[in-house]
Image (cartoon, rainbow, N blue to C red; front, side, top):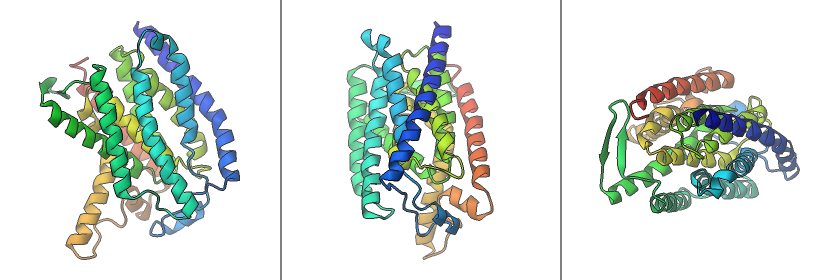
Length: 332
């Protein structure tokens, strides 16, 4: 059984990679024709100005590549009533659509602001509530909170759990979105996270759920072909919100949301740097704790190259994913 699942996961990764690379050639070309160029933050690093006009919304390539892969390879499981991989994908897709609307408004208005923070929050919270309700209805979600390393599980009130889960999802999605600010960064970090979820799903024999992170890992590897420095295309909020939804959904679908603290360490550091910067700025009436937030911009201004940032952030994620994997062995 496990060998079969390993083969299926590797096949999903390979198929998604090839599909996404092929789709990517068409997507990048069409985005250029549509002049769907990225608007760059005016307060960002000065050298980022050269990236203005680079096609955005490129996340479409791995969204489609992943979707086609899990639908085709997961078809036998769906005939037997296994839809978990599809639920997770559709949930991430909803966030991708929110990001698409945001990207479209930015392009149309020729500025780096799309949907308002309030609009994003309401849409994301609604998506989280719908997903959690569906997972509970299908019996795929429990109100038991698993504590890694201690191998302890305790139940909490359903209402409290759902509120906790909804805000964790929204927070995770926006944290991944913040991480997408350097060529190749969000896709490389999330690739490692997807490999972690694939290995765990295979180990726990979570068929057909394992297909989704495996296929997305393949899609992200393909996207890196176009997104490594200097990027030929950006994923946009279309891609980063989809990835955030995928990471959060997998944490809950595998019934171990607290593991997101470890596998998502880079997302958390990026978010905390932003929060610290704003709080310090207000408390000191204009002083800055970091040279610029989020964290990757501070490190850029400290002399780090984009390639170094991608390598270090991916490496840190790998170390914490290994730590997370060790932390759940008692449960497996």
